[in-house]
Image (cartoon, rainbow, N blue to C red; front, side, top):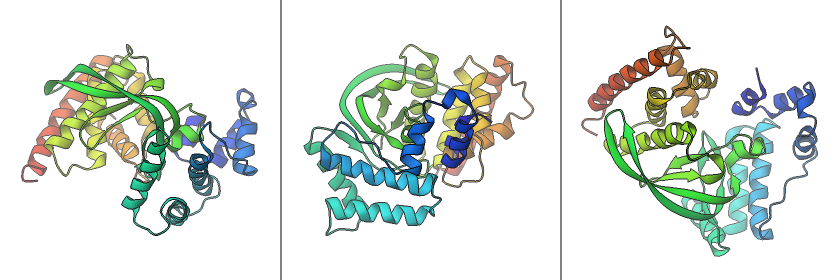
Length: 296
């Protein structure tokens, strides 16, 4: 097991113990000790009032990933502290998000609040530019305009836990627009053109076509699209390592678990076999989705 497995499972104590046993982490280990054992939280180069908001999230992460506080209790604690700061007369989550968004906007920042893979975490950035790509998918080809998000201050819980080593690189918005974190990509790489662009473009197609599609179904289909076009066998190995059926809110882990099963009898080092199997499974999934959501 490498250290990424601890982060994916949200096991900071395990990650710290792993770092203590491996020399290559001697420089970063004190940073984890300082935050999670000594509660010396990070300060960001933003206004004090906004830093206070991010502090509440940092405490929430320590409560869950280090102290082991029950998720519901940690969420209630986070929402209460945020409401007390930005909308003391309200306790509605939608109102809270509106207040937080307005607050950051008033200081010139763009933001998104909500959950990623089951955990709360804000995305705060400075600027958005747009760019249009032609994206080929297994059963369609269309132009997709994406938002390229620049100058990130905060990028969700995984980015926080790993000091930006891992983290969300993009997402599809409710209106179908693809949002891409600029710092996360080489825009000429397969990681961007396939693992981001085709993955997220498939999300937009599926969300429009299948109104009530589940998050796990979305991720499963998008991961199959990646495998259809990727020329690196390591991608399948990555999905297999991410497989996790133990957390019902982790759509990525559940989708990867299904892929692990579906590819159990596939030559995992043969790109042609992987691509053909992925396309076959995608077509099967499309037939299932058409039947399941034909009246949605």
